[in-house]
Image (cartoon, rainbow, N blue to C red; front, top):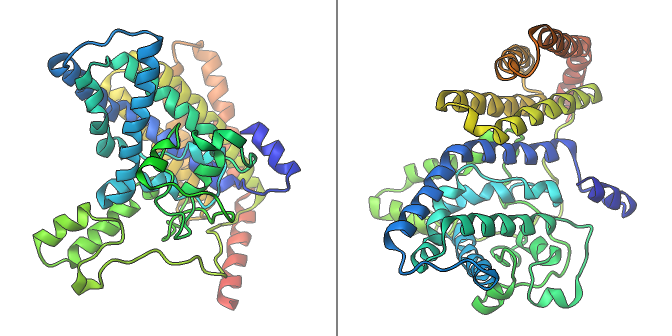
Length: 400
């Protein structure tokens, strides 16, 4: 991402915004910490099927690995495609598409619920006889490949465009222009899109995002907003048959008596991206706190086996709460200051609890005291600046 930032600066391409990039990473963090609980289900079911119903046990070697890599991407294509074509499944995948930018941080913008709707697409691989360890390795490599294609810094890639998924092909996939919607679902290979009629060449630069922008930096709301809309629309549908159809039809479908299918519309000429502004001192504050949160998250994920289930739940809750608090700062919510003061206290206590055995009590006391003092002083020092800033925004809104 650092290299991409430099390249984009030379290309005069302002595709990074701090609030958007941190929200993207926040959603990736949420996906990882909730995945601690959800992935047990998906890998557990795959292992259960493999151990009890596999038709054979395929030996691991370079050739079977390459075969599994190809077959995994085939399963991924259908899981990904159905995540676009089934309304319920779209609720898990829409998170990844909801950024209105396109850069490497968007690759980290992952859903906390998508695994629930897609893990069973890979069960045929267990029936064939590919062991769970091989599947986990292949899935990781497939995901890693997809990271680098989320960029505008790379244009076309010659002959690779014919059979591999590339930045150009994936930019199309993230476009909200009607001709780009539901195209180029492949993970590593673009062959399946060409074979099954979902391929689209990149023409003009796409407008990124979804047809109904989520307009929030709150990672929890980004995860549940589509489900919330579904709940409202299900309440308008009169009978259970149509409610079931609503769940499994394409996103945008409604019964005829409610207007029928709502096709995607062309992007409005005066379309503007969702954005919020705040004083620079708070931008620096969020970045400072975010670096520390990433440290806690990394420590948590790399030491999962040392935590009991209650500790896992509490630490995951703190991490998710912190990401929500940062979104409140970005959106200048009225509750952000009180919540952030409380969060710093809880965060400090958790660091004391988690790191108590790593450092001496005196050193830990000094470190956390300095952290709390700097954080509180930073918030207090800029409180008047923020109040003036909010008043200015309110006056500008009223004048408009």
